[in-house]
Length: 336
Image (cartoon, rainbow, N blue to C red):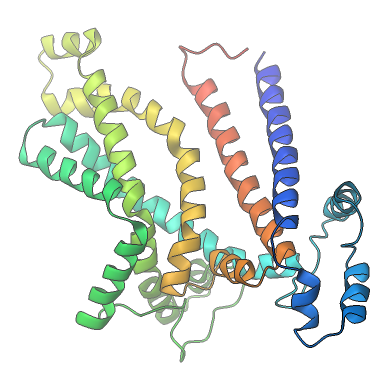
């Protein structure tokens, strides 16, 4: 039964990815700009543009172009980037580690701040902790990410001069030996602690800005879930036994209150990955978001489709894993 449950989720995952590939392909092909004209340049004659369009396979029908694209995709070929003049897969491998490091750092910050704040807010309802938590959650869902990024950059760099303005490392610091592509992890593994401190220093502002809205989501979900759990009969029974409020909350209530938080974890990973587009562009973080933003401006649809497929795959896989974990972890659900 568990195997059938997992198999159905995996088949659904493949269907979603196939639909995403069709949608991104069609949307990329209906952009008003002509990629062949952009590559050839404004002074190229019509014959040169037409020859380039023929070489790029842009003259065929949409089904023919999609079949050619999928044939290459199944072989790991995402095409060439018109703007960087390199294979899109190579570009993604270059820029993805920076975005993954930023996303994981933002997720860790969100969990480390949002969950404890939600627990404190619910456990001591209508206390100063609760008022501060509700204020933080309101700000998190209300303030636009670009505004938080601009204010963070203004205060951290221009006013206080505490944080760098952009990049992953200072200009005078050499990157660590590449093992994972995460500068913090690679520098720590290599024992280059000065590089580690510099990489962490550059990561702090983008990760906090990216996590700001997600902190509010985790805080709200955890607070609402814990308040509901604290009204259950088994919690009243635990209190009747003479257990302290702290013991009741931490040992009996928090575990069950975490289940709804698990359901939104995959959604938040996708939200962080998509939010990195804007944050990376503002804070000049050299990741996949900045690469995709430049590709959009250049009408580089091969790069745009490649990034979209990678992010969509991460998003759907994360949600599928969370869905499977939720179905296995919650005994109230039938895994059939």
